[in-house]
Length: 373
Ligand code: F6P
Image: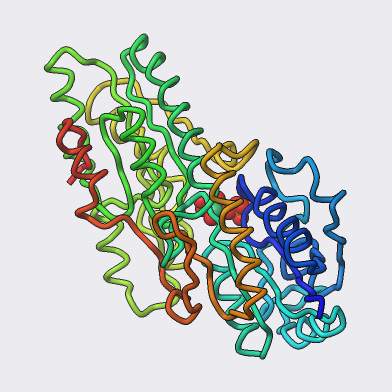
C-alpha cells in the first residue's frame, strides 16, 4: 500500500533544509512510490493543517536554495500561542495527522524539534527526525546539516576581519551564533586563525584574555582577533549561575559597563549581547582600540555548502528506507559515512557541547591560541 509521508521543518532556518526536503521527496516518490505532503511553518502548519504537496515540480530546483520552502517556526505543540493564550495543541496536531492519513511525520530540526517530535511520539504518532542546526549541538549525531555552511561563512568573516584589525592595530571581536555550544566559534576560530577563542565550555577570565593580547603586542603584533561564541561565559557569569541554581529567575549581575542588568531567565546568562561589553573591557585593559562584528543571521542564510548538500541528501534519502521498513521513533544520525537510526529517548533533552579534550581545542592551544582560561 502507498505510504503517506508528512514532512515539516521547525526551529531556526538553516542551509540544507531544502536539500533534505528534496532528498526525502524524490527518493520517497521515485524509489518507493510514497506520497509526500509538506506542512507549512513547522508544527503550527500541522496544527492549522496548512499543507503543500511536495510533488516533482515543488522539489525541482531547490537543492541549492537557502531557507526552507515550507517555512518554519519555533512553535511547540504543547505550548502554542493561539490568540493571546498559550495552549496545548497536541490533540489538534494528532487529529490532523490522522486527517491526512499519514503513516509517518518527518520532523527536521534541532534539539527543540527532537523534543517536540518525541512528545508527538508519546501521543501515538509515528515520527522520524533529522538533525539540522548551524550550532552542531544535536546529541547523538556526528554533525548536523547547516553547520558546515555556517562554519564556512564565519571563517570567511574572520579572514576578512584580519585586514582591518591589522591595518588599524585593533582588537576585533567576532561573535558567532551557536547557542550554548562553542562549535562555530571554535571551528571558525581555528580555521580563521583567531588569536583568542571564547566558548561556553571554557569559562574565561577577562584578565587572562587581556594578558594574551598584551603578550602579542610585546611580540610586535598589535592586532588580535577574538572569536566569541554567543554563549561564551566569563568565570563571574558561571559563579552567578551556580549561586542562583535552583531559582527560576535571578537578577543579572551588573553589565560590563557597570549598569545594573535586567531580570533575566537563568538560562540566558552569558547568552547574547555580552560581546560589546567585553570589547569595552578589553579596550580598558589593553589600551588597544576594540571593535565588534556580530555575524548573526548571516551564518544561517544563503546557499548550502557542498558538504551540507551531500549530508542533507544522504540523510534525506536514507530516511525513506526507514519509512519503508516502518522504523519510527528515531532520529537518523550521521555517524561516519553511515546514517544510523537512534531512538529518540536516547537523545531528547541532551545537547552536544564541545568536549574539553576535543582535537580542535588541542590544536588551537598548540598554535598559541588563548581560551582565556
Ligand atoms: O539554533 C540556531 C540559532 O541560530 C542559534 O545559533 C541562535 O542562538 C538562535 O538560533 C537564534 O534564534 P532566532 O532565530 O529565534 O533568533
